[in-house]
Image 1 (cartoon, rainbow over the protein chains, first blue to last red):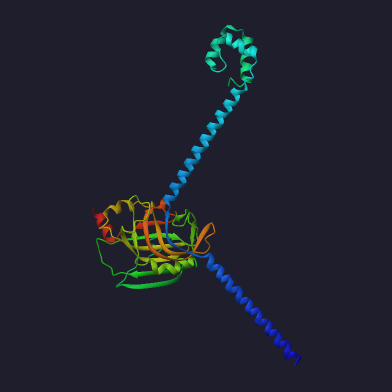
Image 2: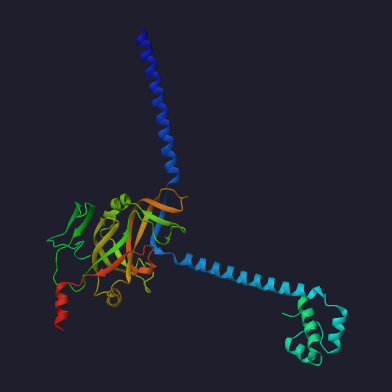
Length: 135
Length: 201
C-alpha cells in the first residue's frame, strides 16, 4: 500500500515537472518568434543610398573638424595677441623704429631694426617671441 | 565552373529535377533544375552560369533593404528557397550597379548549393539585349546579386542579420564590386556552334 502511495506521488511530481517543461518550451518558442521578424525585400546589392548618406555625413563631419581647428587656431592667436606682455620700454623702442605691435610683419621688423645693434635686435626679437608676437 | 558544376545538361523535354549528391570532397550538394529542350543555334538563348551568393557566410557589405546590417543566408534557408529561384529572371541596370526588375534579360533554369556557393545557370536573351554582351564577356568583372522577399531575420538586434527563411524573386547581373557579396561571379557559356563560327571567321 505504502509503495503504491509513493509511486503515486512520484507520478504526480513527474507530471508537474512535465507541465513546467511544456510551459518553458512554449515561453522559449514565444521568445523566438518575438525576436524573429520578416523583411519585405532584400537585394544583395551595396546600398548606394546608404553609402551616399554616410559619405555626406563624413564630409559634414570633416568640414566641422576643419572649422573647429580653424577656430581653435584663431582663438590661440587672439589669446596670444591679447597677452600684451611686451615691456613698455620695448614697445617704445619699436615705436621709435616705426613698428607697431598690432601690425607686426617679419620683413617690416627686420627693415625697421636695421639701425639697431645686433644685440639689440636679438633682444627685441627675443622679447617679441616671448610675447608670442613673433612666430 | 563549366567543368565543376555542369548545371546545363542535355535534356529532351521540359522537366523539373532535384538532386542530392555527394561531392568529391564528401560535400553534400543540393541541386534543382528545369530542363528545357535543346534548340541548337537558338539565336536568343545564351547560356550563363554564376555564383549568386554564398551561404552561411556574412555578406561583405550591407545589402539594400537590410537597414545597414550585413546578412547571412543560412544554408538551410538557401536550400529551402532553391525552388523559388527556378524560372525567376535575371536583370541588369544601366551602369551595372544594381537591379532593374523590369529590365529582365534572362531566366534562371538551374540552381544548386555546392559547399558555400549558391550557383545558378540559365539563359540570357542575347539577341534582345545586344548591348549586354560586350560588358559581360569581360571575365572576372561581373558578379551577381539576389533579390529576396519575405526574408525572416532570426534576431533583428544582432549586428549581422541571419536569414532563416526567404523567397527568391529574381537576380541581377552587376559589377562584382557593387554586389554585397564580393565573391559572386558571372560568365556566359558560349555555345559550341557559335564558338566554331567565331573560329572560322
